Image (tube, rainbow, N blue to C red; front, side, top):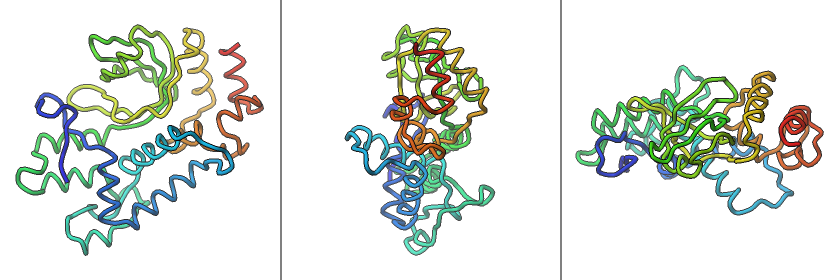
Length: 266
């Protein structure tokens, strides 16, 4: 197991662990925990088994599981220790006061790991800060600059504004004054940074009116889903209607989508 950074060899950038690596480590060391978490994730997402899904969507759901498992799940004790007999006794933990995220568990393991292959104290602080501050939400793009590598976004669910360092997204949306991006961000070394692959992106609608209406709608409804709830919203089936996002849009018979589409898409 190795610790990677955002830019290999650049000590000015914070240390970061790939959620894919975290999930793969648990898959090798404790398949039961990995399998239980995967079953729970897809049960909550409630993917329509009778609807064909593109390879891209299936891959995105797999990435989303890895992010959810790494950041939002909890495991018992201190997680992975390197002792096979101890690691096999680790279980998913549902008491937030007792568990530790797989992301932090691997970070702490690497911090106390083998010489030359672990995380030093600075890297360990980076990983702890990412673990403590990361969250996923629906963001409205207020501004984007390639030169600075930053996006100015508004959290549509909670009303906060963030300047997020994400050079790839900043280049893709350079000059944009609107659009939606659903992603996970975390604070590390003095700035907010994207720390996952976007769950959903839409460049249209992009007017100021659309952004204001979207913010008013989401916050007015008190809609604050967790990450797996966001995955279900865009790719799974709603608990109340049994419809997926595309089906709901086409039928326009759910109150939230109907109001949103009537206000900003016509």
